[in-house]
Length: 271
Image 1 (cartoon, rainbow, N blue to C red):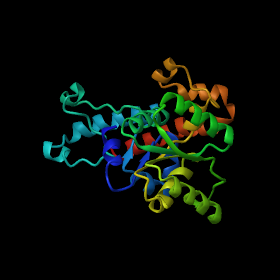
Image 2 (cartoon, one colour):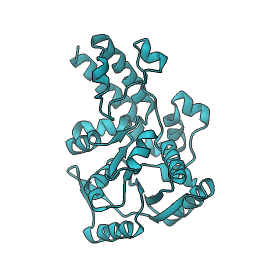
Image 3 (tube, rainbow, N blue to C red):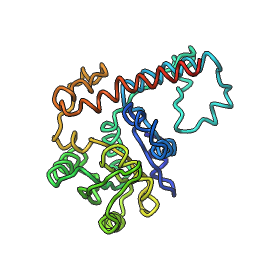
Image 4 (cartoon, rainbow, N blue to C red):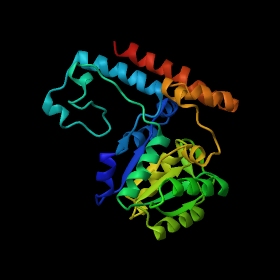
């Protein structure tokens, strides 16, 4: 959040992405997507499986080569390190903490309200989701200015390239430009939203932060119910989603078994 505050008060635009296991699996075959993810100004760990394997890899790396203090000072924002005040850092262990994208979006809205910054919601697919989203956010943060909102439009990915109607896209860009938000939340679904941000952020001069938020609009608006808190803490939110949305089986299989396969393959190849 300190980094987000820096972004909001800078002269440049910044991209925030929320990698999860499914996204990293897709990036194994989609080099364009991988390049975009690696180009994020701030990437948070949004996935229990990713936090587990990230912590495992971090411990192995520390055992092989512990960086010098001057090297830590040069660490890129995308590389996750622990504060020197963290006991686990002093003991040489490593822990990658999961931050759910929807929770981080809420935190950013709170920060925007505090710093008198404006937000814009793009995506969601229908007016009811956007209307409920604005209602919930407005009640939670009464002083937050919602500069505008748009349900988005149909996007397709062909040969890993993003395809959309240029005229429709220009109309959306014009609407955002005229609304002049500081923060743009984009909910087109992973892969599409990151590519859209990468390709269009340069044309939005007021936007200091563009964040891909996936299904966050659905959660906040109440269209989709989140797992109970105890399941979230246990890292079993994916199991709850599967129970209420069986149609997600393919995606959840990819985020669990396929992701584990790629992880084990990388561990073996690096031994």
